[in-house]
Image 1 (cartoon, rainbow, N blue to C red):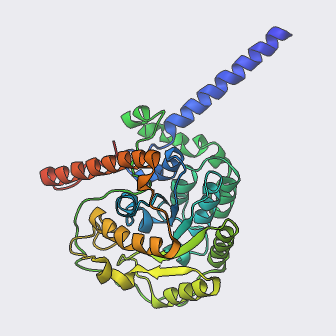
Image 2 (spheres, helix red, strand yellow):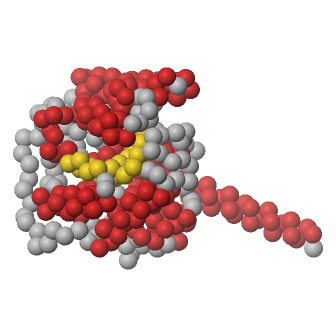
Image 3 (cartoon, helix red, strand yellow):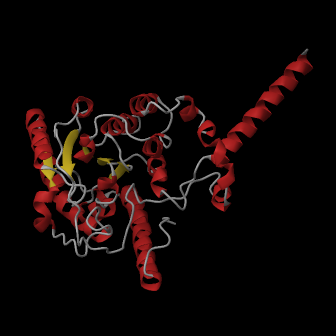
Length: 353
C-alpha cells in the first residue's frame, strides 16, 4: 500500500513537472516582438522603494524618464505601464503595488478613460499574465476578460498557448528561466527620430461622455489613494495622436476639481516643456523619444517637488548606489541605440543588458 502511494505521488509530481516545463516553454517570452509583454514582471525585481508610481498605457512607459527624475530631482519612481492599459487594469495594478509599498504620489495617464468595456485579449495578456498571483490579479482578470476568453487559461497559460509549439525558437530556450529586461524602471528607451509630419484626423464621435465603468474605476482610484495618504495626479501626456478632444479634457478637469486632484494636460504646455515634434518623437508624434521624455521629466519633476515636497534622495547612500547603477544602464542603452542608428539606420536591440 505504501509503495503504491509513493508511486502515485511520484507520477503526479512528474506530470506536474512536465506540465509546468511545457507551459514555461510555450508561453511567449516577448524577447524579439511585443517586448512590452515583459514590463509588468520587471516591477517585482525593482526593490519596492519608489516615491512615485506611474500607471497607464504607452503614454507613460515611453514618455516619462525615471532616470531623469532621479538625476535632476532625486525622485525615485517606477512606471507600471502596458499597451492599452484600461483603467480597471491600472486600478488593480495600484492594488498590487500597495501589497509591496506605499508611494507618496501615483500618476495616472487619462487617455484610456475613452474605453468603457473590455477590448482585446492580446492586450489583456500583456498586463495580466505578468502580474503576481493575488487578489489584485484575480480581480483584474475578472474585470478585463472579453466574452471569448477562458478564466482557466489565465491560471494555466499552457491551455492558451498549446498550439504555439510550431513557433518555438531559440529565444524560448534562452529565456526559459528569466525574461529579457526591456526597460529601466518601466521606461522603454527609444532613441530614433521620426518627425510628426502629418497627424491623421479622426471622424467626430456621436458621444464623448466617458463610460460608467471608466468613471467607477477612476473614483475607486481616488478613494484608494486617499485611504492610503497618497496624492493622485491625473495627466495627459503631450503626444499628438490619438487626439485628446476638448470634451474629454473638460470631463477630467471637472473630476479633478470635484475630488481636489491635480490634473495636468501636458498638451497645453508643449512650448514650456521645450518639445519639438521634428526631433522629440520616434513615432510621428504618437510617442516621445528618450530625448523628449527627458524634457518632460524635467518639467514634471519641478511640479512634483513643488506641489508635494518629494524628498531629494540623492544623499541616501544605498538609494544612490542603486539609482547610479540604473543610470549607467540607461546611458549604455542609449549609446548602443545611437550607434545602431548610425550604423544601420534603425535600432536593432531594445534589450537593456
